[in-house]
Image (cartoon, rainbow, N blue to C red; front, side, top):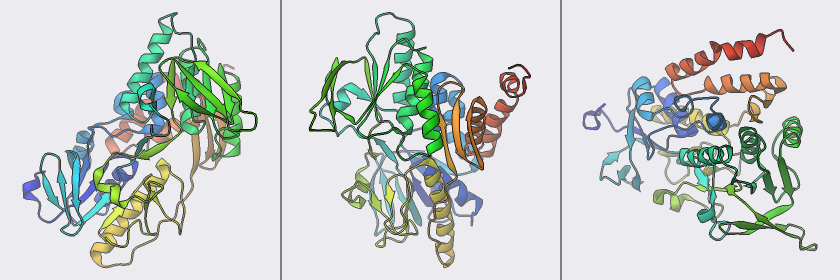
Length: 400
C-alpha cells in the first residue's frame, strides 16, 4: 500500500505491542474501508509471555517474534518502521524522524513500557531487563557461558518476584542445570503478590525444587560491577547482605517507553489518565491502550490480556465515533492467568480449569500460540505444536 494513494485520512496506531496489534486486527475486522497504519520503531512484534520458551529453545523466533511486514502482508495494513517525534493534536498530524508527515482521522497510542533503571544509581550500567530481544540475547549468552565454562560461580540475582522474575528464575535454573545459585529478591513479604493463590503455591513448590534462594523483605541498596548490597526493609534490624554476583536481571519496575510526544500526557505516576472510553477529554480523536493507561473510574491491572481487550474495545469505539454512535466503556474480563515454571512445566488458573504440570505447560503454549496475530501465523504455530511427535507422546503415552 502506498501512503500517497490513500483515499482518506487513515487511522494511525502508534506502537505494535499487544494493545496496538489487537486494535489493528479489530479495526480491519470491522473495516469501513479506511486505511490502517501501524508505526513502530522495531521490525518485529514480540509475544512476551512466550519469551521464556524462546530462551529455552522450546519455541522458535518466528513463533515468538514475527516480523511486522509479514503480518502487514497477511492482515492488509500499512506498516512503517519509524520513530514518531511529534504529534499535532489540533491539526491531526504526526511527524516521524525521517520527516514523514501523516494526517490521521483517529489516532491510537499504545507505545507500551520498558524496564525502569532509574530506581537505583548506575543500575543500567550493571543490570539488564527481560522485556525485549536484546535482553533475551544477553541472557541467552550468559546461559551458554555458564554451561560451557567453570569460571562462572557467582550467583545470578533477579530483582523482583512478580511473574517475570519467578518465571525467569525457574527457566534459567533448568537451563543451567543448577550449576550456580539464583537469588530472587523482592521488597515484599511474598512472591507473586497479585497472582492467584493456586499459582503462587505451585510457584513456591517449583522454586523449592530448584537451586533458587529467595530474599523477601529485601531490596537492592547499591550495585557495582562485581558486587551488590541487599538491605532489609525492616529498618529496625538494619540488616545488610553483600553479594558477589555474576549477573543482575532487573524485573522490579517499568516505565513508559521513551517517546517525547507522550510526555505531556503522563501524570505524576507516569501513566496516562483516560476516561472509561480510553480517551482523554481534550482530544476525542485520540485513544490510548495498554500499560501506559490508568482509569480511576474503572481500575484495571497491567497485563497482555488487558491490553488486547482494550485494543478490541478501542477499535469498536473508533468505528462508533466515525458513524456518530455511542461509545462503550471498557470493562476488563479476567480470563485467569498462566505461569511458565521451568522447562515443560506451568500453572494455570482460569479458562475453567486449575492445573499444574506438563499438561498445563502444553495448554498454556497452544493457548498463546492461537492468540498470535494473523490467521496464518496462528495456524502455523499451533499446527506445529499439534503435529509434534514429542508432544503427542507426552500427552498420550501410557508409560508412567
